[in-house]
Image 1 (cartoon, helix red, strand yellow):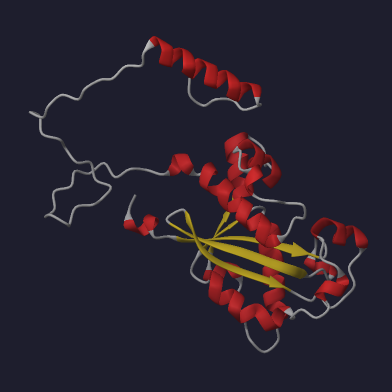
Image 2: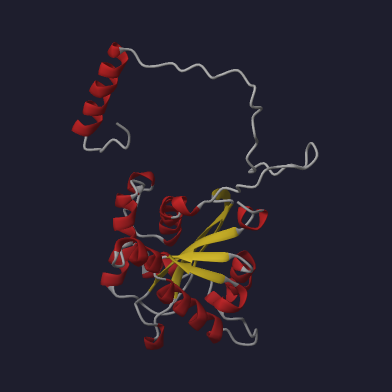
Length: 241
C-alpha cells in the first residue's frame, strides 16, 4: 500500500434531517462524523445537533428520536458551518446514499448568508457506499443489510438512527466492504537499513534451515470439528473448516 493511500484521511459521515427533500424546506438536525486514517478509527469525531427553526412531525421524531423541545436551544447551521467545514475539508467523505446527505449539506451551505461557503465537492472527494453495495451485490443495499452481512451489526446500539451512531456503524461496514481492495506492494526492498518499505517483500536466504511442520493430532482434529459444530449451532457459519 503506497504512503499516499496509507495516510489517506477518511471522514465517515451521516446526517439526520426533518424530511427527505431540502427543496421543500427540510433541514439538517444532526451531523455525525468519525475520522479514519489508514483504515483505522483515530478517535476524532465531529458531532452537532442543529435547530431546524420549525416544528417536526411526530413520524420524523420517531425515526431519529430528536424532539422539537430538545432541538429548540441548539445552534443554527450557520453557527456550526465553519467548524464542520474545517473538520471535513480535504478528506474523502464516506457516506451511505451520498446524494441525500450531500444534497442537504450543499443546501445548508447555500443558505448561510454572508459567508460564501463552498459546496461539498469543492473541498472533499466523496465515496458512496450505496453505489459500492450495488456493484458488490447487484442492487443497492441498506446500511442495516450491510451491517448484518458483514456481521458488525452487534457492535453498535442503534435503538435510534442517530447520525454519529450510524457513522460509527458505517465505518465498520466500510472496512469490511473494502477489505479485499487492500493491496500489497510486491516490490523487493533494496534500500539501506531503515529505508526499506515496511510493505516490501523481504527475501529469505536460500540456505536457511527448513521450517518444522507441526501437524494436528487425531484428538486435536476431533476437538476442532466439535468446536465448529458449537459455532454452527449458535447461528454462525464458520469461515474456516
